[in-house]
Length: 312
Image 1 (spheres, rainbow, N blue to C red):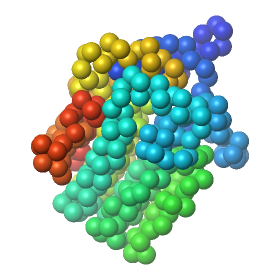
Image 2 (cartoon, rainbow, N blue to C red):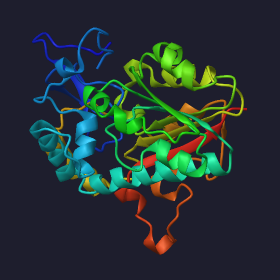
Image 3 (cartoon, one colour):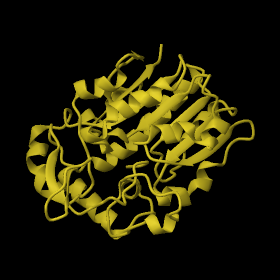
Image 4 (cartoon, helix red, strand yellow):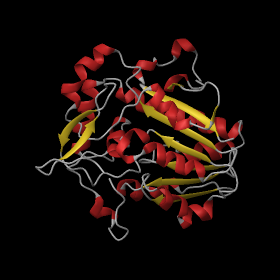
């Protein structure tokens, strides 16, 4: 449970690149979903009733940075505030997509994974994860999980499976792993007695410690068999130059979306009990890069950690 204030406003964390999250009073954003970045919605609430265009939302803001059109003025204002503090944010989200694609190809080609559980899917952006996996192995089966109503509205784009494989969309919240794991659409699509790749791409930094991100991740991994994989990318301030951090707070203070930057050690803790595959914990752009070093985006311009680990 997040801490509150006597005036009814919520105390949350904002997207500023400091080693510890900066707490400020922000407008209530409980309509924000944590598929792509509030609380699980009531099942009988129609998606249209869950959209508040006046409140910035992580998935829509991400869409804005990627050049998409599924966003509102509040999302663009929030995105511009973050970009003023950290001009490389657009590069970061692009590199995060590239990491997802590289890691998916590796898991499909090298690890033989044919089942994927992608939580915090976000607004579809081609190539989507199932397109990457099925481009290598058409029989791949993918379950997308999100509870953002805009993502739900675009779910058809996520369900265009190759005929040999399958895709499904589950409307659920990351903070409710048992609902995800027990959902009939997941059970109909994935065989949890066979290895699954759990994809938590740029999502765990939207869970403050009070939401027990480590426990949520552990519960999900526990439900998967030996030979499964955990993939995570996560925002950090470890890679950001101090002069950027010194100028970031005034601009980012209007972003109004909770975000918890974590250190390398904190990020590593998500993989306790698992076997990290090379190169281990690395900056986003240095995880099995396709580009030669001279063409690679510097780590400080894509300030996220990335890693993939196998469940023994």
